[in-house]
Length: 250
Image (cartoon, rainbow, N blue to C red):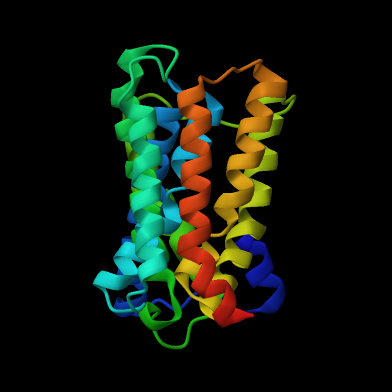
């Protein structure tokens, strides 16, 4: 999708050593490894629980932004990180919080995705981008690099799935997903450039709402009081982490 948009604009990704290193680094962190962890964990966890896990992305992003000096320390935002961690403990600590207590290990694995997303958002921020690049060409380079890295692995594992008509419902969903992802990543890159990594992660608000609602409506998922309490704490923590940024942007 992004490649087609670049073709229409006659604006192609740059292929210098600096740009190629950037494409492969961001492609590995933000897509290849992060998505492999995400899909592996999602296979075992309820959709709503995985949605809650993904809302911790702003907290990881802010903590990493502090470490890389892209953001300054603000007490209320730090308190939001602590509140979010308390919500995480409500999911992983009580034996009755999950449908099967053994899933706690997949919860811990799942947190690798928001951590890597946080690293990816830092790398995709305006300060970290290579020179003479725009959001669309960076997206093409990142997705292309991730494809180059993942394709040999998928083929070697015998997991490559060609898409040929007639398409099944799952394949239609997959095609719809990658079309939406192309536009989504372009918009995300622009938001990262304009407003910074922590502000851009506010999409997590909508992600948890849609994830929980779709899990309940489409798959009849139910959650324990521990998980609902975790949702409240993590949502409050995310709001505190983003509070100062909203005021600054507004």
